[in-house]
Image 1 (tube, rainbow, N blue to C red):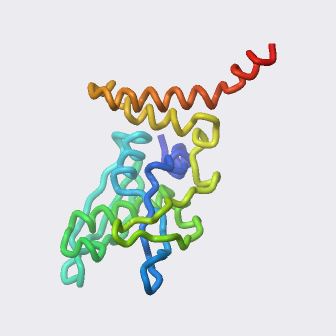
Image 2 (image 1 turned 180 degrees about the vertical axis):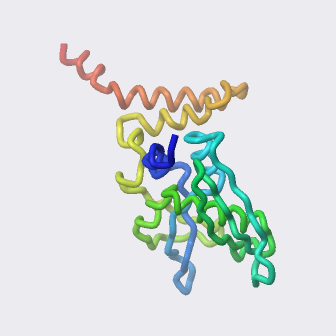
Length: 200
């Protein structure tokens, strides 16, 4: 297997629930925020594990003398290596872990992983400063969502599959949550059965 064989799968949009939003700027009264989309390092690792589990590696090297914690990351996928610098954001001063996650994501973008997020328009939204989150989460356009989310019931199936990934949860409330998503998915795939019954 070569990198070119899996490029399309690496570049595919992430499920919507894995895409987060963080503020880049605020209005003076902090009632509105300019949001940027992102995925976390774990989502990148999961993508690499799903596509080439035994054929990727990531190494870091601490950048000495940097004003904030910084590392040089080196991501190798199927024998191809890309490098980039990662820094700890303001809220994580001094943490090499945050800098390492940043470096992994930056290196991954060079392989096309999550690169499409840079094409999303920046959005001004109402901001809840007390909760430090947008009052309403922005919607992703269709082109920035995976194929299964564009089909009826797809998003519900993905949520159910995520919860069933390792085993059926023992917690009864979690089982109900899985059932709810599966029922919603089936309902959106086969809504005609009700109307057919009425028409007969």
